[in-house]
Amino acid sequence: MIAPYPSKPKSERISQGGAPRSSDLPFRIELWNEEGSEVERVVARAYNASLAQAIFKAACEQYPGRQLSLWHGRERIAQAE
View 1: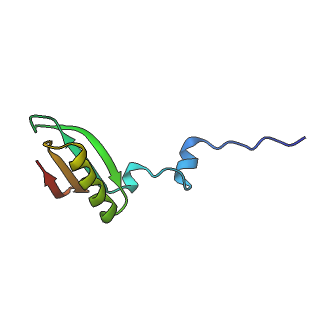
View 2 (view 1 turned 90 degrees about the horizontal axis):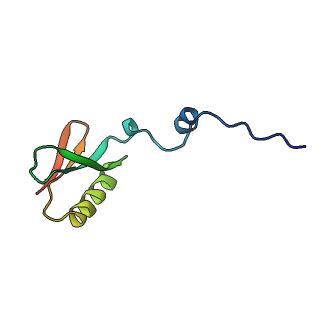
View 3 (view 1 turned 30 degrees about the vertical axis):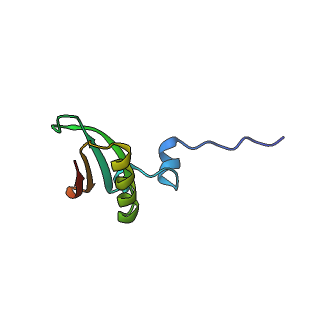
C-alpha cells in the first residue's frame, strides 16, 4: 500500500514557493470611490515596475473616468482621473 502524501499547513506551502504574500508584492493599483475620497479596492498587486505599469494601463482602460493610483510602497508613481 502507498502512504498518502503528507499535507503541509497552508502557511508553509505559501512561504515555500506558493502564491506570494502581499508584502512580497510592493506595487499596488488602487481604485478610488466615485467621490475620490477613499480607496474602494485594490485592483491588483505586482512584483515589479514593468508589470505594475502594464496592469495600471489595463485598469485605466477597464475603469474609464475613474480615479486610479499606482503605488510602490508609500510612493505614488502614477495617477489617472
